[in-house]
Image 1 (cartoon, helix red, strand yellow):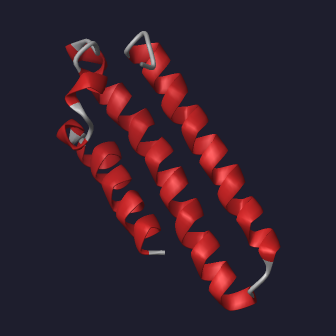
Image 2 (cartoon, helix red, strand yellow):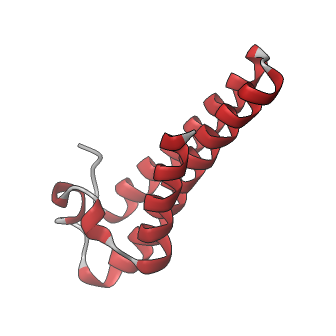
Length: 96
């Protein structure tokens, strides 16, 4: 749950405050200056999705103690990674 909170906070800082130095410089160096705001929004949203999924999975697992809550994590992780990859391909041109 702590990792989920940390990821959510980092994602919100990137998304709302446009603090891109929280990302590795390699990922932002090819992004044009006019696109950095849009890139920050999409990357922040992707990280928030992963963070919220991690937090909710931990919380529900503590409360319900059921194995099916891990499907929530899997769905949020896949959606978050999809948003991150899509933003990186759109604004950076490459993932690696």
